[in-house]
Length: 346
Ligand SMILES: NC(=O)C1=CN([C@@H]2O[C@H](COP(=O)(O)OP(=O)(O)OC[C@H]3O[C@@H](n4cnc5c(N)ncnc54)[C@H](OP(=O)(O)O)[C@@H]3O)[C@@H](O)[C@H]2O)C=CC1
Ligand SMILES: CC(=O)N[C@@H](CCC(=O)OP(=O)(O)O)C(=O)O
Image (cartoon, rainbow, N blue to C red; front, side, top):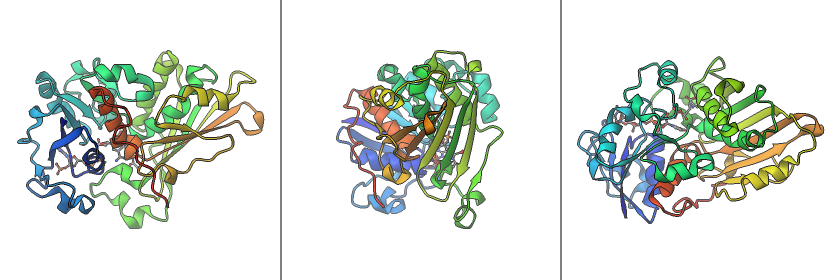
């Protein structure tokens, strides 16, 4: 059994991590933190865990994090970077679900996240935790930056097209929709029932912080400079609790390619990417609670526009599930261990 710590256990991603890890046969959660709820029983906060765990929330300052083999940070941006250097120095491996270590450029990070980076020296060795592109580096990593939810759905949609150099990198569009749990559990007017239900809106059109993250990943996949990628990324808030739907468009630069076969081959050995049959329209509910990304590729009227539909559960493949997938890879467990959860319908 490996000893696991979770910092930020009262948020949606922390709770989802705990749900998955309590069912994991090789991981034992030895500490889970909350400043607001320290001392309180976890099962009191999360009634679905009653009878399954006797853990209580620890204060992040007193939690035995240095006794852990691996610690997850499920905290707001800017928190993990204050504690990660000392944990790494003690040999504790870390997976950060926030964005602290996702961008390689500290100046760019400061610009998008509105605060200076406090340990920019770690950015070069942090591994971006999208297993479908970085599996080998994740195995050896001490510090993994778990991708954002939109970046996961969008990169998995564009990756095969970009790796095979089939599309115009200057004409990428990602039209994305997220459920409200993507905004976290903290009180916020925009996520109140009366504001978010029976409503649908775009936000961040002139620049969302996931834009540089997606561009960085796509540039790596295409082995090009980030300046060669032009992406229009428009997120929307949609009145559901979980789920991301990304509709990704580009212009084909070649004719006659069998896109369906290319996607199938590209993801053939990926346990958590399901390429659906020709003509499919993946639904967010088909991945709810599971670590899957379901993808369908379309070429309407066989013209030069390609449309890729990609769905994930923002809290699972978009956060906690992907983090457990990364943990499995880092600790040498089978990648699907503890993650063979089927989506819940309806
Ligand atoms: N929600 C989603 O779909 C996704 C979220 N993420 C990222 O994952 C991270 C967590 O998200 P989410 O669970 O939604 O966030 P929440 O806002 O729901 O939860 C944040 C958690 O962090 C704790 N926390 C806050 N400040 C501190 C601090 N200074 N020190 C220690 N603990 C702190 C909070 O508990 P307390 O205040 O009691 O200590 C709480 O448990 C964020 O960075 C988010 O951007 C990534 C992908 C998807
Ligand atoms: C619906 C909603 O508000 N979603 C969040 C994205 C959640 C996420 O993945 O954010 P991090 O990059 O911070 O980890 C947003 O747009 O800010």
